Image (cartoon, rainbow over all chains, first blue to last red; front, top):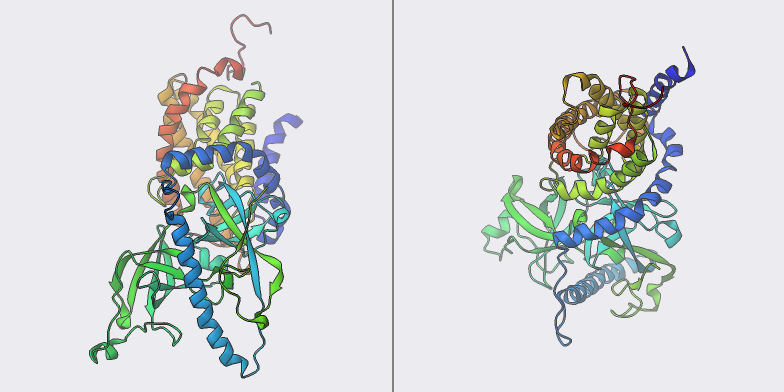
Length: 322
Length: 191
């Protein structure tokens, strides 16, 4: 048999063996992903921007110079809510300090704007590639937002020029981050926090979770069936209510970011409500994201709680990608 | 077959696939078509088997390398390379039974090729799940049958962009430099 006749069968056998390699052996092959993505980016980026523009990116129209745009309003609301959350945490911290607990330094964050390149040619991969990587200071587990306040995902892995993001709507999101099902707080109005919500499952781009009793730091406790029968005021959870991130396992600077809005409320077992959340932003319709990266110099709490608007996580510095 | 044009078209379609595929997706997690498979089918329809197989392997391997999977965001090289090679074989063996120059043929065979590719890809990932366990195992996003069903629906959807791509590929045929697959040279060419 001539070499030309055996080349294809040999190639297919070699590829078959490659296809069955275990995960640890795949790391060496994954180095080829970054240069290929770099080659495809010049076409993917402008096409993605065009597609997002055609689909309508949802950007608010320009208002007159004296009015606040919805984006600015949302950002200020987020800063206010985060400051209130931080105040609640500081109250708890003061309590712990009296028992000798170490201080945790708060880090200032900077935001790196990065274009979304795509999902990979096999759309079932589930991960989104963004054109920002270690060169720009992106690290694994960094929080990814859109327009500064809308939470869309976390960085799973950062290469030299690109990074892989897991959207929060990805069904395997909790498994990707050590089975952590993140939690949030349902806002009864723009400033009043309601009960806690914890993620249970993700399906068809929706986040499904249960509502739990809040701790003493919350403003409005969720009554259980017994207190409800005692005539206590029951905060009603309605579709359209905003849900913000409130999870100690996430960075302090990410607290109170917007997860989405309540889409459906259903009764669940043991009297708990099951709340379905629709994220405000969908990565598949976004052309650019912001990756929040901690600054290298921590801001210590010892000097007193920083005021909003200063160098605090509530007012992150914005650094545009060159 | 002359390789420059297929390579350029493959590069363009590979770059466009994530964005266009997502834009054409039905619903948030519904089926999405492949716009690369029609190119592989087109090549398999008119090129000799050897060139068609290598083109399919190259296209499939590019898809594998451009897609990150699992908790470690790793690439798995092989499933789509083998899937596309199987699709090219399917198309090549179907050639005597079809009217090759009909755009509808490209649409129908793209559906068939994508179906074959989907089965092969799903089988390979199922084999990986069966062989490896613990920290060496893949993280499954969905149940196997659910994944296969999604891919089958995507395959059916692939026929539509294939018809659109036929309007581009057929006029470009002279630049592909196809020789007749039976080994005969084009009319007037010297042996």
